[in-house]
Image: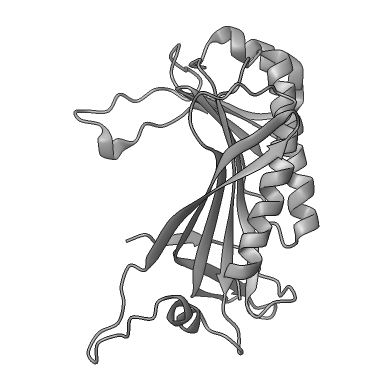
Length: 267
């Protein structure tokens, strides 16, 4: 099943349903593999010093791995494996031909999303100043929103509004997920008529709410059904040749485009 879990407080924002942004991802694709090296680690530690929260090896997808798994000590990272660095709550993942810059900070309004995305872009530029990334062939901005029902509109009513197929008398819909893509063109920086994918995925999710009473310290926990809306705005194709400076302009356009879509989808 495609059920995701996130733990947070949810705020009401001038809309029928409550929402929160719980993940923001900026991705750049290159023609180079940025596998781990002692040199890369040393340069980044020298750049960010005490702000470095963690550096480690990215875990492989165990579902695709056959045979016994070799356990690597946390302080020993093999050369040339996919790896990550975390600075100020921003995780940068270096993989084959792509770099993900990810924030899991909970965001409750558009202004905060703009600020946080700008922090991701600035951090990416600092990474590039330290270990030159070079030309970018493709890029993407992908925020994930959590929607929660209230007294006016429940999660179940939301699904009924977008899936018109009626339930059977003795059963209801299971594993609900919708995904589609629309193509468009945008201009940013010096790049004109760039083909853009707008990929939207709507799926089931859950929010875990935990409260502790002040008198007796009893912990009350409950799981609340939610809707997860993931929007992925990305350049189409793999033959682009974008500069580092173009990432900022692309992200501003992608962010506006994503919010316009979300304003429609959250109602």
